[in-house]
Amino acid sequence: MVSKRILNHTLSVCPVCLKQVPGEHILINKDIYLQKQCKEHGLFSTIIWRGHIDIDEWLFGIKEKENNHKINADCPKACGLCSSHIQDTCCVLLSVTNQCNLKCRFCFAENDENEEPSYEQICKWIKQLTEPGKTLLQLSGGEPTLREDLPQIVAAAKAAGCKYVQLNTNGIRLAEDKDYLRLLAEAGLSFVFMQFDGTEDAIYQRLRGKSLLEIKQQVIKNCDEYNLGVTLVPTVVPGVNTHNIGDIIRFAISHSPAVRGVHFQPVSYFGRIPSLPEDGMRFTLDELFYQIQQQAGELIKPENILPSCCDHPLCGFHGDFIVMQNKLIPLSHRRKVKKERFIRPVPLSEPKFSTEFVRDSATKPSPAEKNRSFVARRWQREEPLEEQTENETSYGELEPNIKDMGYFLKRIKSHGFTITSMAFQDAGNIDLKRLQRCSLHVFDNGKFVPFCAYYLSGW
Image 1 (spheres, rainbow, N blue to C red):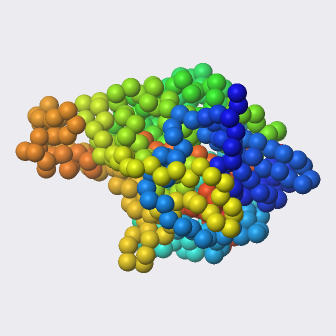
Image 2: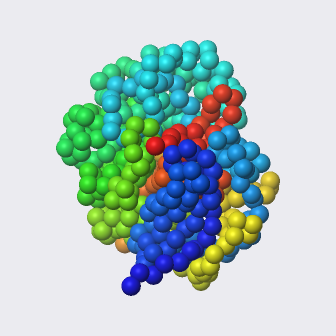
Image 3: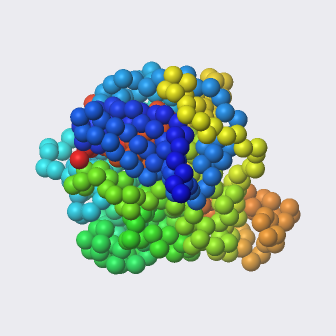
């Protein structure tokens, strides 16, 4: 017998015309679907949760507060950081090129032959977007390393006051051109966000069109030489690399401290995808959480992975660790709290979403500021420890003996490690209430645009 009920109401878009439409979260047995209807194009339904984690505990594990923020009637068509947007900017993404040296099956960017922005134009944008001493800038594309002047762009960002400069890259040039990498490091590059889909070349053949594993390994080696931290970024695609999640984590740990963590991105369907994906092509956030538990074994316990406290909890999760002797010592822990249930239809006039992720008062750091600090502390490399080795210290099962506390605190900086995820939304599963809490913003034409709104494309 099929059990079906409405959990709550929200807003989404029609995946064909991209116009704003009403939507509902529907619980069918243990699965949750986003169902929406366009007057012109009909009814659409997309799986968003497969029941591996109790949705109430994941969403409402902390005290619920009222949230009266309304959604802009023009969202996401005229999207920017309007008065309806709740979250501050954690990271700013700036595309510096449309060109790429790969033709991947899945990519949020549409590579084309448009005229490239000049160095002068990019410097102007950087000055506009930078909040001195705070901004975390992601240089993206296309493939940014196709620009010869990328080291100068990094230097310009640091001169403008960007606290951290991240490079989003497939890594090919960083593997092949060490002089170029050296110039990036000398210019002040903070860390490298590297596309890394698995530990098997067959995975790269299917997703990227060529064998790339050796190149990825060389990037890690080269970056290590210049003390640049690398975060591995797998695009997780059902039937391609979902079996490899545990091995990716073990690979990352074995390459610590050069590798600073793994940032999983369940596949989203932007750009080149010709038709609306079926539910079997979806890999939900709770599936990823479940597979990490299944494949990583004792390395990571469920309570050490927390829902996002910066974006909406359906957008991602994070876990904070230290690498010691190829094991992960947890620094984050999800508390067990009394569960509050909100399994009743909630009208749009009375939204019931957690406001833990809303801006704090002016006297406290916002969630975006806290997240930016978390990212920077863990992904940026510290100088390696020299005075002691792991074998010279005494560790308990989960933490060091108190006499080694000084070493332990240094180890946090030198061997910090994260397991994080970001589940981007596409036209099939976009929830505008999630979009309100987005903290990853693309800078375009003088304004900040939530990532999923910027790359949204219809079928």
